[in-house]
Length: 84
Image (cartoon, rainbow, N blue to C red; front, side, top):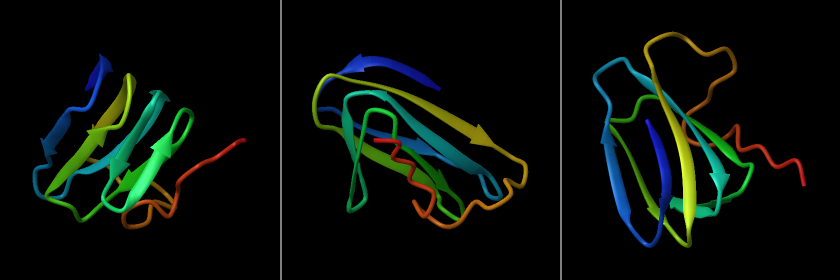
């Protein structure tokens, strides 16, 4: 799923059993659970029934719903990347 610019919206993407997800914030900022992710951040999710996030500002995201094992993927956002 690619979502071009949206602001202050809540989005829920259901995951089928056994599916995993990778979320990348292209631009802007979101809350994902208790975490705040901003431009360039990424998060891996597994063993979740849905990806639930809220845009904090004008935001663009890329959400990959994958059905394969992702090496090193840990529950929620142990893989949050921040290159800043």
